[in-house]
Image 1 (cartoon, rainbow, N blue to C red):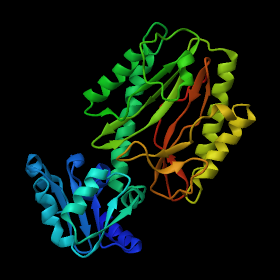
Image 2 (cartoon, one colour):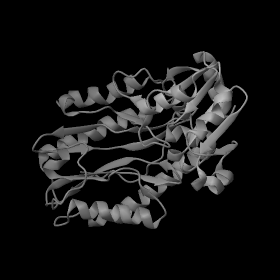
Image 3 (cartoon, helix red, strand yellow):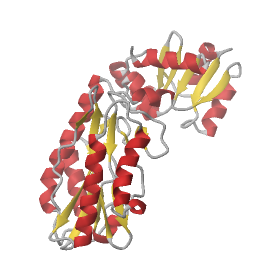
Image 4 (spheres, rainbow, N blue to C red):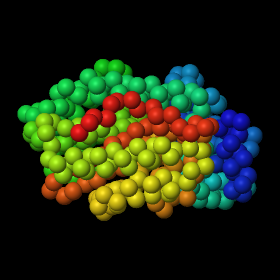
Length: 349
């Protein structure tokens, strides 16, 4: 069953006749259109149409798996009006703006608009063979770039220069950084989202590097914490505790595992080392067309892992004014367990 058929089944379950898709990642997954921020999709029981404008006429024809209508609003809405008249039409409540909703109400007065959330996102959690190939390629590139840049992570080098080198090498390979590269050294390691700064790395520090590649629209994500010289005994202890938690959570990944249980595995290990309060975020998340997507691996999650999901496992411990550690791998959930997609070595700190 393809994605459009899956969406139509989901719409039946939601009690609506059509879905107006505005979230860019959802537009792309349904159409293949690589400029999805400038597109919308209307899915009905027997048709689907990509709406975009004349800047993309040729591109849409070449890329889209479904028919296109080339125009700007309000012509877009007028074209779709006949298909939605008298029906219940779902819209993506987690993406459509208030102004966008008012436009739909103005141009589709005969349709009943229904707020929906996560219809396409849930389907995107299970990756196709083509998507897995794209994510593998993005992670392979990230592994390669990290290996190339690792020797420059040394005393006297600015965090910003490390991040720029990562970004440049990704660009040279035809990719971009999947997100702002995090390079957090010494006490800045206590910042889980410590985007690279002008701080100069010093001897005896740990440096956390969180990076990913976006290649052909798909993302990868991994984190390594490395030592510059000899770190303190306390930070070595923290590193080994995080590594223990990460390895235990990775080993437990399999179909049918509850995301909340995975989070608890890592969190309990860190708590046993006196670092429970220092683990300040969830264990991980899904990765695909977005670098953060479902499933959510947090203590309150109701998600259950299934074969075909791509997830991160990334426990961390952060000590204010001292430093921090995060170790993150990218995994594919398989029919029998899991496959680790990130292969950059974890150093013996």
